Length: 163
Image (cartoon, rainbow, N blue to C red; front, side):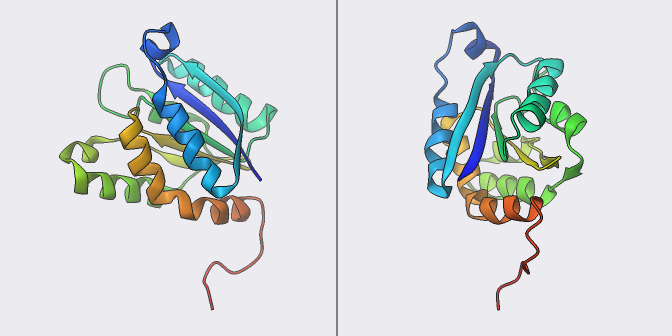
């Protein structure tokens, strides 16, 4: 069982002006890898709040995986990547690159995503865009690699390559 936290980062969602369909999409997809959501919140697009929640979810709650949705674009209020970069100790650029590559095949807007993936302590943190469709497309690309990545983060000594 993979313990999961979902942070939906949306000013409108935080105010109650928008239903969070993206968080629900993450929860549905995570079940495919035996993930169990143990923490979920909708927070505003505020760097300090995002940083605080990423630290809380990784250190206090000890979750194996945190998935954020929202705030990865180029709008002035989009600060999720900066908040994530402020807390991670190791970046995993290949995951973000894979998501952008696949998104760009579907829409040219995919290339302006600034999503970041990385590790804090023993927690994998993944940024996703804010729409349910983009969540589905992006998370589906990296979903098969997540259990192995989490095992390795937690010290699994087995070889990464198959025989």
